[in-house]
Amino acid sequence: MSIFFSVELKPEAREHLYVQLYKAIRKLIESGEILANEKLPPIRTYASALNVNNITIINAYKLLEKHELVYKKVGSGTYVRIENNSESIVVDQRYKESQLPNQTNHTIGINLATTTPSDYLFPVENFKSVLNEVLDRDKGGAFGYQDSRGYSALRQALCLHVLKENGIETNEDSIQILSGAQQGLDVVSKALINYGDTVIVEAPTYTGAIATFKSRGARILELPLEADGPNLIKLREYIYQYRPKLLYVMPILQNPTGVVYSKEKREELIAICNKHQLMVLEDDYCSDLAFSSQHVKPLKAIDTDDLVIYIKSFSKAVMPGLRLGFMLTPERLKQQVIMAKQSTDITTSGLTQRAFERFITHGYYETQKNMMHDTFKNRYQVASEAIKKYLAPHCEVMCFEGGFNFWLKLRKFSSSKTLYEQLKIRGVLITSGDAFYASKVESPYFRITIAGVEADELTFGIKMIGKVLDEMNTETTDQFKPIL
Image (tube, rainbow, N blue to C red; front, side):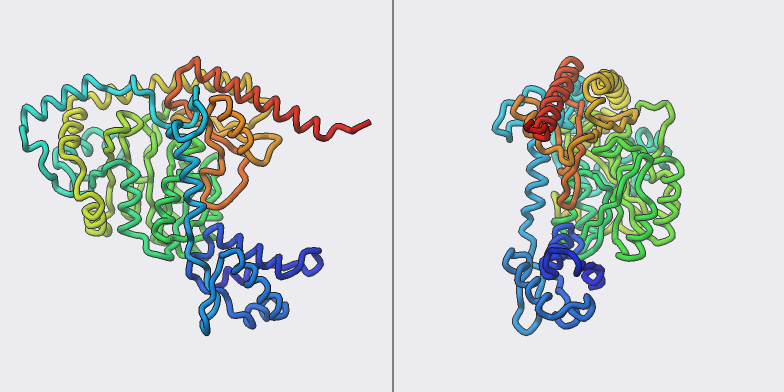
């Protein structure tokens, strides 16, 4: 209960002490630092610790109960109410709206929010060819159940053609085939996370990960992200104070920011985790789309203590509808992961696995990856120029050479929600920054994604963002003009 005693009250403030205490505890609950069913301190103990009278604590607890944040057990005390997941639903709905524009009440002309690539880029003919090859070769056997770990030939191909080029030496026994990267997050959570465990995530981060960890009843701590990677001073503080179970990171072209961890921070992060035996879940979001000539290797390539769980999906470089990915599982977690996978969907589609093994072996994967790389490099350059031309007066932008995303910060506004709403009315969709945080925050950031938009639409969409920001700035200025 030490987190409760960190609350600081200000007797000199105009606001009543019990209101200050109510707000402080509410913030702890909503940020996830206090979990559902966690007991609040006894009234006398808490009053003594905060140097206030018992009535202050009683009134604060009553206010929390009035707002349905806590409940009482007769003869036992006051407890945090079971989370109704309303916050998670809000975050997930914003993200769903960005991915599926038909979820909105407006016609979306330019979707600068979706991370799904343009469908004409998908390798239809090559995949049709390998599907036919598998059906001719394996007949009905292609439709049978596979080993829960995945099709052996595919796991061997991944070792030879995908992992080796990333500096990861492994064998097929360490590979678990997945029905997409999101399933990997779910499987790891089932295998590793128990109710009340602490998970550290980057801030901001992928909202699907936030929802997964919350669904397991985890306490989520947000690790501030800097231009060269996470704040490692804060990471050490979290480790000493909370003894976390897992650290979730995207070290290469992080979503949503595009940050690439520096060599120094990557090595220091691994050293910290080795020292404290902290498991790391590395999500390789889209390293195939890095534009820099200097290849950055995953954390798994420097994982000396077998603490890194490495997840990679093929949805961005090949086709999202494949629902195919894989995970490198540390020896200590293999059995738990296999059991969690079996309880999720038994096995990933055998036909898809067999076809993708052929796709890799014939060199189609490499060809597709190179084509996607060149396509998005061109779009990235177009978007960069448009941002410089139309958004520079209004925004700070983090530019990293690769991936789909631009992460922009409004100079004059503390929240991007108004911008999001105004653009949606005009048929342009972005993602507001608050969707990428586990806690309730007002964020001046927003994300532009180039995955599903052609070069000319990119320029038009970014120009529209600049126009709306011009209008918003004018309205703000007019509000403060003197009457005389």
